[in-house]
Length: 161
Figure 1 (cartoon, rainbow, N blue to C red):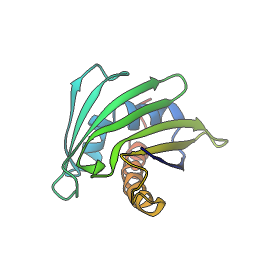
Figure 2: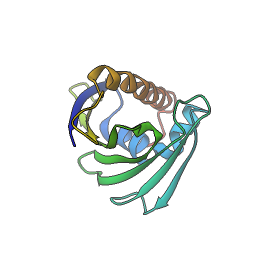
Figure 3: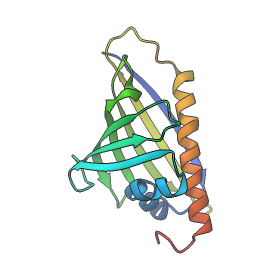
Figure 4: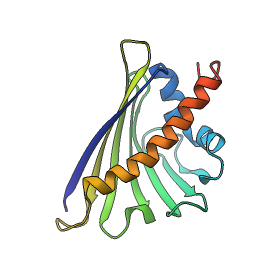
């Protein structure tokens, strides 16, 4: 089994704890509101949202994927760190065993945040076609979700304080 790592970051004017609450802790409720139709449902199959929680995400009709199961690996609200893994679903395809993410939201000098995401793509074999270019395509879609949440928070400054 091999591992392909990819890191990226996004800068925003939203303060860290507000962004962490909205995007990571309440994303299951907020994201379907800000991007109607992109997801059919977010369902907690096991757990209370903390480490060990299993979530089933069902994608919208226009997505190339049908579903993904996420496992929450760690939630550190004090330090704005959220770790989770995609453990099942057609997004893994034939080559991936799982994908692990570490999302850390840190303050920047202007009162906003830097969102750093480290992802590890765990392949089933050492011979695979997972490339940085393919990963970047997926990250662009994820950035679209992030920017929709960011726009919602700008338009609704009293939410998630």
